[in-house]
Length: 184
Figure 1 (tube, rainbow, N blue to C red):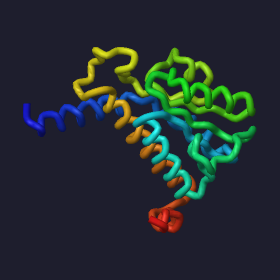
Figure 2: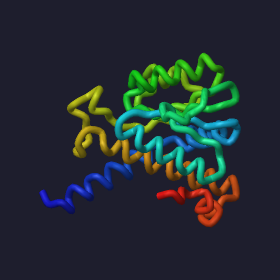
Figure 3: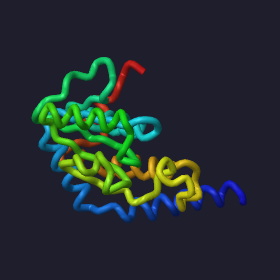
Figure 4: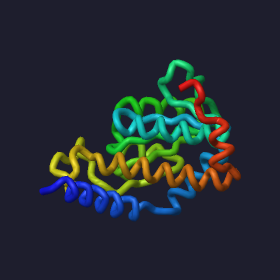
């Protein structure tokens, strides 16, 4: 198989997965984000990197956003929202953060592929990314290694959510760029 074939396989799988996400679930997530005093994000591995990118976009829109586990992240409290990403919905560190957020009376938004997972059952807002997770099924249907399409779909979905929120908050590329990091 040629490299172009792999690119097309990846894009087709990504398009199929993102096209299957429930828009009502996404709108409910957006409502929780807009209602939150502060937004915290958590995820591990590649999913965690995507969640960090989401926090960056939220900050650029003028929202108060933090990455759980960073040394400058404050304590989560009632009125706050934790957005947790985990393909399996069972990632130990993410589940632990979700339990702590619940104890502090914060809301929990979960993005996962597993609707019956620990995280999904805890969620105030739930977005299901319908796809396999290699941690749960090493013989998943995806031809792209180790759940990459799921992580890619998380990025595409959260970028779509970011665009929707930016419009709702009357943010433009110009206003968001004013908040872009300048100590690079």
